[in-house]
Length: 284
Image (cartoon, helix red, strand yellow):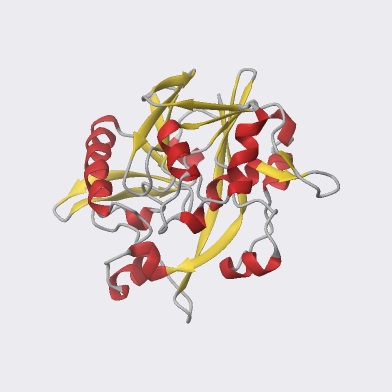
């Protein structure tokens, strides 16, 4: 098995939205912002090559949206999904499995692309099975008013119409060495993949924990639809992570790809943070 962090570019979001009720005087020390209160966030995905399978977890914002829409997110950085895949020797058509942790636009926008004449949409990963939870799919296709702007039908419905979508309702190992676990709070049925590798477990944190700065238990995004449920699910996750020495892979942390946690007198905190490769003992 080989791991490849896949950068798809960055976006800027309001720091207050990203840290919820935590005062700026605290969160800005952990994650800096500009004069407009905007923090820069990665849209980092993860490619796992295991035998004949090329498994991509999340896929960034894509490029289907118009300039007026995109300007709200201040996209920056040179990396794209295609260029990052090419850098490690792969093309979109090589992907066999596309895991969608959830269907917010910054996580699944790269799933679907314009066709050649822009008359319609087609799958970006033409040979892939797309995986997400039934709970998330139902939530995304019948969105509440608060979350509706984050669920774009052009990112979702073409996958269903293609026949490439596989939905599951229970936690389990649907792909060898990768267990899908479900967490609510941020959105319903968020899929958090747990990957077994050389006796270790690498966990793709998605928006259960967007960055190392979010590790203190109550540092929960204002975007979460049920923050008290997020709190419960984080506690469940922390208990498992501490007991099993999980390696956490961060999707949105522009400074750190991965990290580990430990208990302190102030609660659970980051222990180490850095490149994913530094937490894996054998060479990839």
